[in-house]
Length: 404
Ligand SMILES: NC(=O)c1ccc[n+]([C@@H]2O[C@H](COP(=O)([O-])OP(=O)(O)OC[C@H]3O[C@@H](n4cnc5c(N)ncnc54)[C@H](O)[C@@H]3O)[C@@H](O)[C@H]2O)c1
Image (cartoon, rainbow, N blue to C red; front, top):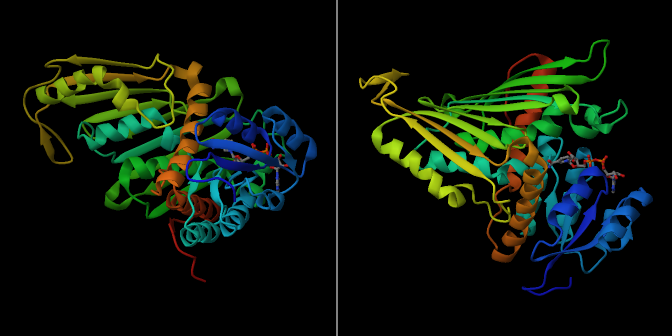
């Protein structure tokens, strides 16, 4: 393959559909990256994207892998094809940027993770929430001890099916893996990083459209070690204009409410003592560090506001789950990336940051944030949730091959 240590990483795209177009626009001009070629058996799609970015147009992954200038492969085909493509690319010595989900079965996800390890190549899964500044900020506040680790994670997703016609691959589990696998992985992965553990078991419900149609509403309760409980509801039943999402984290004496499936605004309410009240107030001046994500370019209008009501409660110790704390003050914190109006911007910058992570990991030889292990864990939870929904029975999450 061409290119020395400082040459840009040549990347080839396989799958020239709707999201590929978004990704290529998001990563255009990223330092250290060069688009080498695009491939899709649907010729007119490949030609349209190839012409837009001024690169050659091919018909298949094999043709991409035959090129010297392709050191990494961006996989943006439907989910059931991801594992075989990632494996082929890794075996051919290429790094991989894989759209979520990493695979549609745990066995396949595990095989890809092992292949990445064996090949010594970088694999990034496009779990965009990992590169979202708000979720990074919440994690940093947890690491600093201002927020306790969540004991409860809740995600309500009133999602749109407006662009998902009845023949779309999304509705066919053989192609998509089903809603938990196709979409749920984003949030299983987000919870994994915010709670800080891999879940152990799942209960779930799947609801089909009236009249025996496809499953379009699913919910799951996912238990993490130590008793943290994460609940998810995905309902692909809305018009775009009626989409609503809320992530709620219960930190005990504090709560975070984060809106948008691409998080764009967080409201934190926290009972606190004087020392922490001062630390909350200082956040206003710490905005750049708190929201920093490598490769994500802020638009400059992000805001943090902090209002502390001193002595809003009694000075006596307050108790929850047996823990007593003297927290008379009430802090209300808003971290705003610009609300819904900035969703597309935040989404595209998160994709850019994920790709920047691939470039950095290849250069520095250190693991990416959304690595193969995060892809595997999210798929394992999604598969267990799907099985729990299908059977009506609680399922253990299995990270290894399922025993017969
Ligand atoms: N990370 C995110 O936030 C995000 C958002 C949307 C979609 N996605 C993911 O992106 C992927 C693509 O979704 P989409 O909405 O663009 O789908 P799409 O149907 O619009 O595009 C898929 C493309 O893949 C091509 N394709 C199918 N099989 C192929 C093969 N064997 N070789 C080469 N090309 C092949 C199709 O011709 C089509 O052009 C999915 O995995 C989806 O889950 C991720």
